[in-house]
Image 1 (cartoon, rainbow, N blue to C red):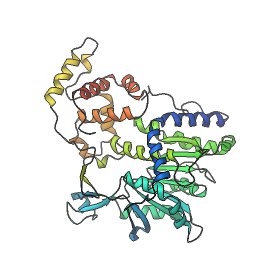
Image 2 (cartoon, rainbow, N blue to C red):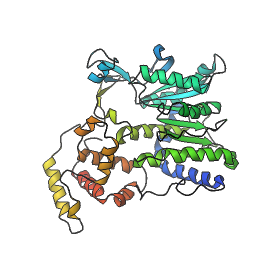
Image 3 (cartoon, rainbow, N blue to C red):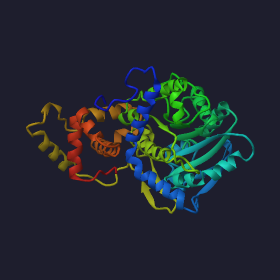
Image 4 (tube, rainbow, N blue to C red):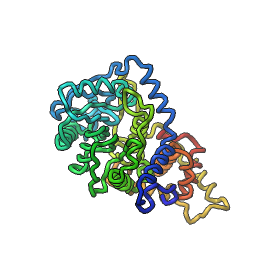
Length: 405
């Protein structure tokens, strides 16, 4: 982890934060450069799709006080745990689910606030639904009302509301920051655009991932930047390599922002953040849990489930050949693919008993593939941090494709 490039918050807090925020914006652009193709696809969808919501279902969850939730037509087969939590009657029943729920929080002005915002975001919501996300516009009068509604939603819909991301603009962004001070366990990620008032983060280390959007004129507002600096620095206090790199970002408002919809960089960040949270440990309870069903009833096994057998004998033979090479330190070799990064991954997810069913070999392949997707030079940085992981990954990758990908 120490071999990763320095973060702009790694240095002492500067006297003039305008220089710091410029470094943060550059860092954000470089870090998310790999998402450019996804952003282009999103813009094409916005511009050319005449029926963005397609056949997606919109439903209410009255017990939680949630109405007009757009669902992605994604289901899973219920497990015994779902039956115990009373979200299903029998094992094997179909349960409505989503990769995550994206919530646009708005300040309730009148009875048309929600309807107007939903229309404005139709295309963005349609794109996210195709990616497996549920979407919601949630009007509230205060941060306290927001916390109450989200807490009820999470309590009554444990499967659907297991992973929540929210976006707020202006006063709604302030509500979201205040909600973290009232309850640190509500959100997985927040998108905060030009907040009316900036509120310091809670002292808890369990902050959601945060992505700030500010206007270029705000780089001269030291008081506001000081609070943003606190959020970013606190959000980066993660042990997970990926989380530390991506959990706190800042961008300037896009000069040619789409008139309708969520900013494209927010969309690409959301999709990738959910994927990596699920696959790299922030949501370990989903590992190997159940089978997902698309709406056309084609079966799609979750990525964490092994899809086909592998030949362990061939893998061990390959590792033996590597360990006999001149530049390899035999004292580091262990027969079960043990290495520093794998140990860190298991330690961070020690509370998940299902992880015991996943081999070190599969963890190496899964993490290695994700490191490659994280952008330029990341795998090289991993090589410097843990040479044994790097050797294992390259040898396993040469044998066969990952059974987890």
